[in-house]
Length: 497
Image (tube, rainbow, N blue to C red):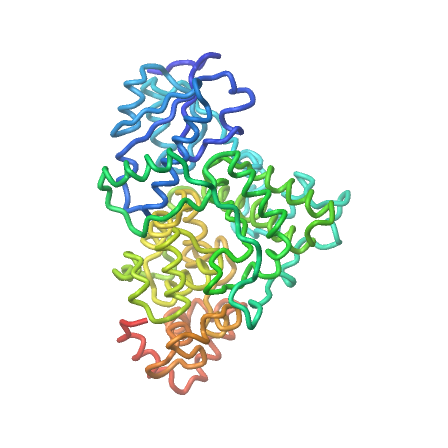
């Protein structure tokens, strides 16, 4: 049984489709249905603040849309749609599981039609044309095509400044002799009665969550997202680029934009952020390396991850080319930062515990790097990242974790594993000076778990690394270590980090 959409068919919005790009424009006349499904909230052990953000976003959308909107609470989406009693339109959802579910609803007649996703810059069909018959993918190729396609930071057919990226200028270590960058604080929304009711309802529901509750730190409406974007562009963007890969223990947000949540909720469109950043550069209010780095994160990497999630398909999440099968330890899964002595790892887990968020280098080069060393199961790790990070929607994590962080896809996405020892963390953070472990030591009671763990990773994956031109040197260096056997024995028995 199927039904056909008409001009007055209501529009059903998922919780990550809440912006004007979805319910405005040609759909601005339609009634809107919003659903709080408690079964979805209980599906995984989510971070408490993640559930707060999702419910706050849904309820703020209901308030902002006024008489257009109907917000329904139910055990399941199907229950709510059946009670609503009218077929609905819906845009393509953002995960394989949700897509399969919506297709089933289409066959029952509860969904009248499924529309293309409007919350990304590039359409799926355009990406398919770009991908063609490729079996290996380079983000830089995709990013340059995006710049040309959307005419961003271009002077005619050439990139502004004569270069496509400014990575070399955007890799500075944190400034010495200071605890923070000194950058003005990011925008923080003011909690309101809606947030108070969300907090009370989550308490009443008794849902099993992880992490601490805390003040809402991220924008959940288009108005808030615009304020957060403006604050970033006017006061923080200038410092963003040069320190985007640095970590400071007392400065959790550094100069990052904190826009991943509103982007992934769909309340801020990527091109809105990109064009505003370019305007800031054109008006001389921010340096080109900083602006280019920010634009690359959104128009390049974010779009790339979205499209590869769909291009690689649902089986991609089962990739495990490095045969990593260790379960996440309880202290990791429970965000027990106090059980950890390594300052970089403790600080990253504390950030996830207290805010459900850390910036990308802590994700990749601390948490991801540690998991790679220890051989944690990539599928379990992907689930963990998706559940505990407030911006970790289902499409975000597979390519980021399985492809980028854990190199579990056999090199489809990245040409080498992102593995490093303690020296990298010592260079790019201020953690090591206050740490119980010495980043220069791989053996002994104060041996750095990253300095030692790196060699366990190289040893475990020697055959693969020896065949890769970019990692052959690591294997040669390992064979020159006179204490390798002792390091391997030490790390095999190690249960304290």
